Image (tube, rainbow, N blue to C red; front, side, top):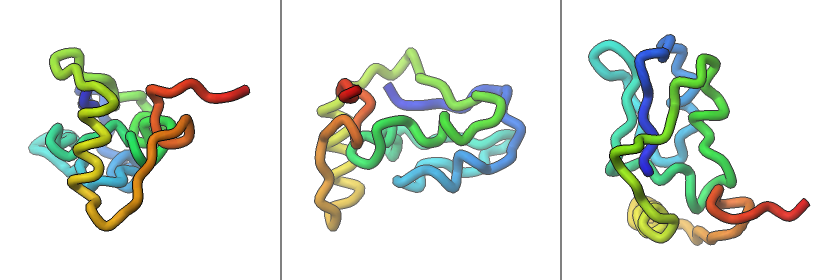
Length: 99
């Protein structure tokens, strides 16, 4: 799934600074996420950084856009061809974290 920002957004901009792909920008009324740039932070972080940074918890999964880890990782590789991205528990929320 891509992440979306719902109407609870308070326009604080905390999410924008956390996105490793530059997918978040100010929309007409609230911040928006470009689904073609959103990778749910797969390849970068073990959690979705925008959701962690959002005070009102307005960054949520888009139930209308289901995507696999493989799809998101492939997108991340295309966005960042200069980086050596990997899939581990630390770089994908799809993978179990060791206790």
